[in-house]
Length: 541
Image: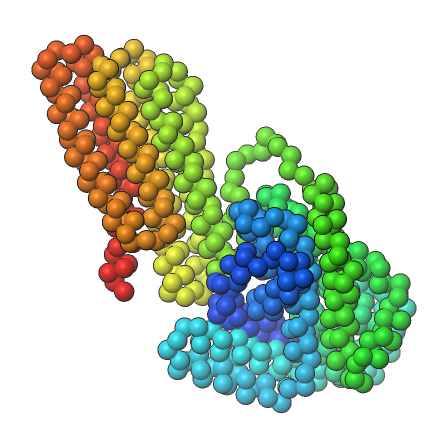
């Protein structure tokens, strides 16, 4: 092979991989935001789950992206893990549809796809149309890159060492499986690996038998993304999804590897004489056979995986639960993950507010320390969520997605601020009261208790506003803040009246009483900020 052919091979590979990324991103941006809801509501039937898994994976151009959705749905208890097995099998079929598409002989029209896709993406005013145009442009680069690689590898037919290597793959498929597994794990796309094999077949240097070994390895290697993600502290549901995926793939490869030659003969019977088409059909047939074998036993598979991958409590350091880095290539999925983490943060802050009044009623410093420790968790989640969204900002997002990202950052900051008020203000005053032995008057204590209860309910209303984005709820939240402001003012007047009457306990706790009221008022102001944002965005439309 000359240097010119080598440069053409590498350049064609770059165009091919770039086209895969462009097509995947365009389809994900165009259709990805609704796919999570589809999977969440329509996977009750295992056969329907297979079909949906295939469709969603074809649209996302990534079985890893489908796996990320499944991890999120199981983590949020939207669907049980047992249902995901059928969707995984369907996702494996969905990845083969891309290979079927790129095996068509349309390289002569590849640059037309690029031109039309580019033209539509520039002139169209509809965002979703531009995304699908970019996907079309991506497929154009895929077809063009494959043709460039095929032309560059043509001379390899006359190289004795290369023919010897291909013969060894046919006679010893384990070598081909291993090489293909490693390569696919590196580039994180089984369709890309098999697409390269199609280019070799088009140039006449690759036959079906060694190509099947490459197919088997690519099917194992594509699981690497999910496996690596679980090493970063995924939930037990995430580990189970990854384990089921890799387990099914390895079982299928073990069953088929000894019968590569009969499998190749069967593929030739149902295919044309074109080797590229035979390779695409072999890839599809393998995954269909996997589904046929395992779909009747999805319940058994899920129970085995649940027994092997258990959720053992451990004293590990507290950390984010939903910020899966493999989802960053898909803004809808990444935003859903970040939203779940912010909801988790909100649950912790809510618990902090609920517990905040106990140290004012009980002389127990452990209650103060317990609440203060929760503030450290909120700080960690706030920092990690914003860092996660910072990485997402480098991806192309729709205006709606960019606004959702801003909402998440904004609400996370508000939550962190509220947690700081509870920790640095309320817990400071509670600690001071306990150490100095101060006692509120019965009337003063009841008034503070009422203010605390109203603040808890106000916070829960703010969470509902964040979740629903409902302007009516936002207006109600703002009105509640005004009522709480009036309540705080009335409670200050009541305390001053007790001072005038010389009520026992009112004098020595005056400063403390006013500081606690002020802290609750500050919390209620922070609670309302998100509601103002919702109304501002509504008015800006």
